[in-house]
Image: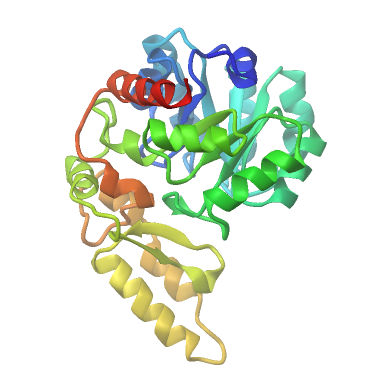
Length: 311
């Protein structure tokens, strides 16, 4: 495929692997890149030395392009920006904030900035500051979400900007990819399906939770905080929803309560396998994910289905 994204980034297929904190490491990113997509290491809230270790390991595992996702609310964001510049990373995706203050440095080091955006206004702002492309992510996705669905968001973003747009949220197969392209996207970002890839190092309990999920397995928590998150239902989500109900009944809700509830919850599920009391982030398409495969098998299957549909 010769989309603008493929030419710009030097990748075979316009498929990005979602940047999932605590999950998207060198093992997963290198496997996706070797399969022709763009693997992405998620920096999350990790300090620079941890991210540097993953970058160096990824370079050993692949000679193909890969990217790093920078979470702009991280306390180590300045260090991570310096790190990607020093390590010669050519693709940076961003989330949870505005990357404008780092744009000059990215340009100086020939880094393609591709922010995740939840709205048309944010997409237009990112194009104005010089972003190479944007990822329009609908609320069907797992983790932190916006207010618009992929179906509604993507075509409006496509109409509003001239740079390439990737569709994200609720995409797991060739049908979803084709739908994104019909909406005007030139690429897709996929997260949940890669959670069960052989090369994904997430705890096996987490993988099994995804594999056993159905169409109604996810729920949104944290609406009261202004930072909603889509996760699979468990004891933790029940506690969150009950706390939200109680706090909404108060004149002055205690939002610190939710910080305590969620602290360390993602690490608990990803690394320790506690899928009852940890945060099991997943998109709404979890019910479509029913088998473990290698990243190359996943991408090959997606592309075969996509090509059959768009002939």
